[in-house]
Length: 180
Length: 319
Ligand SMILES: [Zn+2]
Image (cartoon, rainbow over all chains, first blue to last red; front, top):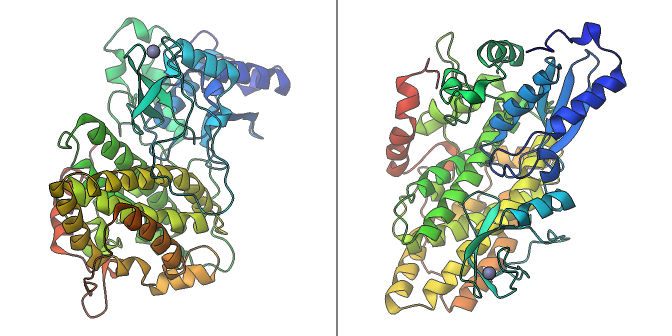
């Protein structure tokens, strides 16, 4: 904890504090998809300096039951401490609800690189949610061979945010981040 | 409520920058990755839980318990399918649906506790159990407000598909309305829940179709499962006094108002599947009281015995 002495009393200025906090928070990766930072996943919603001088980071759950919120909070606090910012809090931002549209282009590239098919555009609705009794209509390309000849095996996968697919060309199964 | 400063101090003491060099270092801390539930963080940390003007906090809390208990109890039932479903994909699907519902339950029970702390069961001084866990694990069945449809035993796979279809269609319709609640927490939980419930409903709808059009046996089981659940369907739309009050105050939804929407969706599934709407009468409650009043079937006490026993044996337990 070499930088542990850098508390608010010695803070060199609010903007510099904020810059360091943003840089530290932006480096934290998702516990379940470690190829992505929380920033690229769109889970990191805000970094600010509160009136009491503490860094306050806002995160939002991907799904209501996201079991990784505690791990994200601990990772953020650890990273901020390591950056000399021990006076930090993490708050939950429930609104607006997370959408896969917030995954950044860099995040989508990182997913594809890791063999996970990135999400398409999230559905936008006005009025009642239409019932879909057929298979999901998505143009999903195999992240391994690039073929568009793919089929869904299950809309629920290894984590809450993923569906299971398989490629008819190379026969490999793969994950697809489903649009919400 | 957790004390973030105390936590930070504790973690600072036990975690050093070189912790990753020692595979066992994390075991000595309260790192939640080692066991879920280890870190008791507040699911509403930093969220404004002020009760809106003109709303009775006790009614708001009770309403949150109703919606939260629906999700909690069905989540526990669906979790029973883990390692038991017909194939791995469906096993994972039920577990995912259960997890979504558990997450909704956690937020709703936490919101109930914040609105009216007097409804949270008291535990011995020094107990680290957070409010939402006290509500989940330390209330008796008569204090649970879930509809009876959520607590019935699973039956077979077809009956579970039918239940998820009935439940998710109803809850999705409720949440679409609830997303406009004057209570910011309820509105946020509902807006998020709509996205999740859409996947639940459509998953169940597709399986309903597959089983109806499958073999004679799959169709027979589906129809039998639907008939077994149908008597508990009317309860979903019976307005409780508390629901009427919170709907009037602009923070809740009167379930009777979504009956037509739900019927239209179910009729489409039934028509597409060629399954008749069951002709069985509703199962009445006791003296007009049902799940929302804490009058449950025997199945709930057995479910709670399993779900609550560990927490109750260790009210001071630090997990
Ligand atoms: Zn392929």
